[in-house]
Image 1 (cartoon, rainbow, N blue to C red):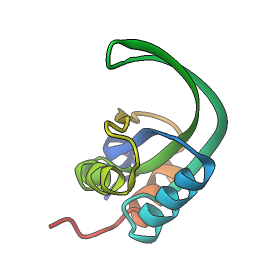
Image 2 (cartoon, rainbow, N blue to C red):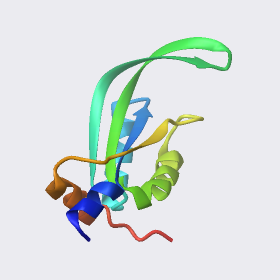
Image 3 (cartoon, rainbow, N blue to C red):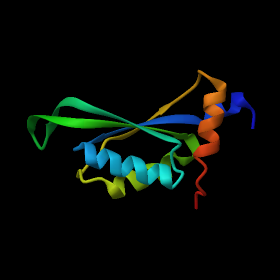
Image 4 (tube, one colour):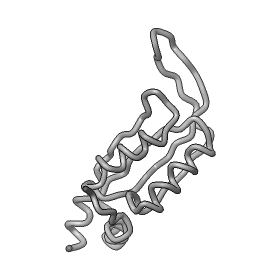
Length: 115
């Protein structure tokens, strides 16, 4: 696989979690399962959103997962199964440019068998 092809197939998956512990648990589980090459946790996010007819405000934790585009569906399924929210935010952001060697690393580490 060429470095250019790796760049075209890499994705960042944006997830919001209710706690730092939950973000760690999900991040560790998907990296150990090789569904993601890396998990970054950003604590201290404040969210304002509409839920069940009311405007809510709360603290959340951002979980950024780097993976192959071909693993996003399996990764989303696993994150959703582990998540405590009724409707977890799991959003793919395709990655199209940057350090080719880093993209090759993502491709090598995110290598789960998808069934």
